[in-house]
Length: 169
Image (cartoon, rainbow, N blue to C red):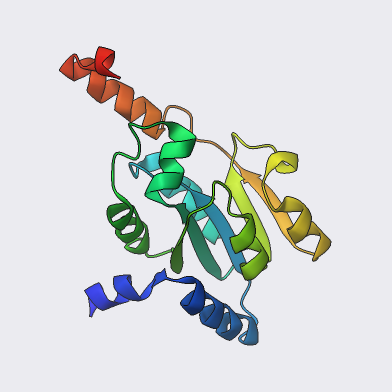
């Protein structure tokens, strides 16, 4: 039963649209966030729990492998999309995970029409993709506190410095 619960949280554009209709009929407050979530760490968990506390349903948009490579460089992602989706879906406060191919989640935000749009504190509200759409629709956009010292880049650099491979990138 536990595995099926995790699998059921991973959506396609078709299944997310159906789920959103159901949640909106149930008058659920939908929160949306997105990111690469390449190596899941404390900062991610802290941020996602804060995002979920802003509503009833947390939908996480996750960049596809090709999108992560375009944004972060050819050496990324470290974890493939399947791993990243399943790790996020295994978190009890994440209700849905959906992959997007584009560099930004604008199309997903248009589809989901969340009540709340969040990003980590390293993003200013006026730079969050889709903020204007959410605000015009009467929703809220929040930049949540960033947990200093926790990032995939920091973890990657730590690993490289310990293996002596930092010059290979």
